[in-house]
Length: 473
Image (cartoon, rainbow, N blue to C red; front, side, top):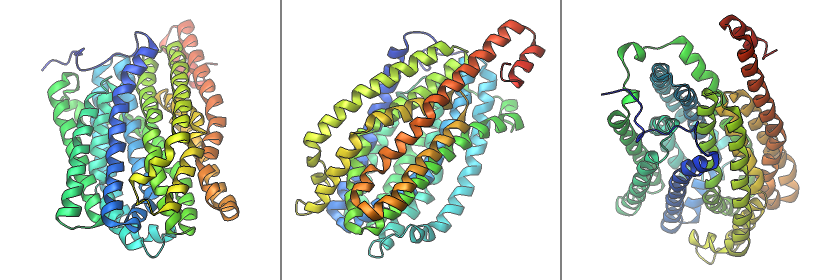
């Protein structure tokens, strides 16, 4: 099988109109994310309608912890894909394959350590975040099986990230759609057919994600000759492992640090009782659906920036950031208008019409969040761009800003203002992150441009090394 680049399988994002490339890459990702959130909503509807509000609250009470753990998994996998995109942009395909191989070794290690460690601490974690006593047993039965499925989450996200790093954003979506349909079918089979209760929802999620990962693996073997790894490229390499960890671990920590703030907020929500938990769980399921475009723009900018950074086309990166920010801002306005006038209809899908308090509070949460979606546009576009440039450590600082914002709301304002403070927690976190991310991006791009100018002026490899060591002078 040839290792030459097949134009039907990969996409070079270093040439062509930035806005067209971003839209062309983001739309398939968006469709996949929308479908994923749709089946997540259907999952919640099945749990809420078939098992009751307490079961829905139990699943919702684990949301922040789930995000903290699986967010770390998603983060490191996204980080592992960035050196692949950079080497693809630089057309160094042998080095690219070495990064792929070493990413696979690292993923296997993370899968073993995280699955054993986190699943054994699950009950204690639920106690630490003050999960209400009337739902903690069901919460445990759900989330412990999700954590036992960490290897499946790693498998899919690593392979999907590598496929996207080569410019193919469509194929992972196809497999995600297939697994989503499978998830819904397995939900019904486990919960209604086999009467497994709330555990069945977790079984369905893990099994369907494993199927997605396996399909990605066989697709890569068949379609990407450029990824056919030779024996010498398969060996562990200290240099490649180091680069992957330097980029991947901060990205994972960024998600987890952000999620620590969410865990604090979840504990504050739990302190308000199971009705508040059900309200937020219902609203967040709906909100995540409307946030999919921001996630798609972020994922797109990571690949777009990675490839262009590898090709040292920094002006194109700035053009892409402007285009993605404008697209996200226009969408933010439309989403707010839609949720303001019609948002109350969405919570009725999850709970019986008699649950008036849950419906009212869920609508309030949706409207207040949507009012500040433009802040989320900046968080996703600018943070993922910084990561694509290779400055993952700075993205961790943004995560710390979000954590501080949510912690302040949870510890200080929720006890005073109650549910309204819960609704404002994420907007406050986004605002603090943006205060850091915008100047951080400017710093990164200026530094990289200066390094490039210095390398061009110096000429020799020795002088280039000096330029890098001194931050381009």
